[in-house]
Length: 298
Image (cartoon, rainbow, N blue to C red; front, side, top):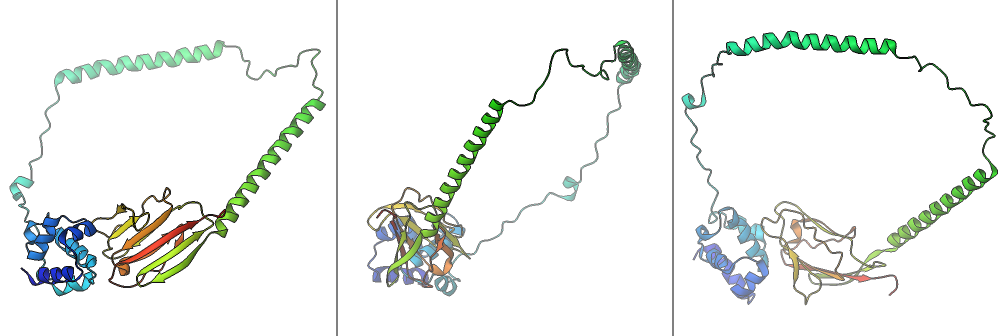
């Protein structure tokens, strides 16, 4: 067993976590967890996953993942670049292709077709010129009004119709403005209130809100493990997988509450709910953010 694997195993046993518990927490298969503890990194899916799996393991047992990776970096495998055999200069430089001489038959056909096409084009031009000269010039003739016809301007009925349309348009615009003002007032009244803070757990209440519009967790550097539940007793709704440096933005519109577990808060750049930013603790321990809804009617 390697020093890194022995160190991780001792911390796991101190936390009284079995390999099955750790597999459920990290979503890493049990056989890979055993391989990490025994130092058999060659059995992992690839060298790339070694650092990601060790980091996730360390965070799950409450260790500072960056310190673990730095301390035991000599035990972790390093990716080796593959040697690519390049083709020889003779293979890369291909002689230019020689153009096949044009067939004499093609030249003779082109010589015949060109005069024929010229004759057709000239004939069409002469035809259109002749047709334009014989047609009567009606473009410049102004249309005279018929006898007995007159226009007395808009009638009173037309004026009434125009007035009704303007009134209806004005009512629609005023209704739209009232609806927009009501929406802006509701959004402005919504607040995120810290109700309780205990150790690494914070509980917030989102007031005057009927639903969650967004949950956005933006990562920095290598990111960290994130798990989303509706509450502490429910199952996992969504979580991220290695590598963890991608932003976490699940659909939360159907949830009545949020229960978010963060592996390492220092690897999170911003944490926002419905546009409200939440400050995380700069700790290597797992921390929990819980947000409850409180609608205006409650």
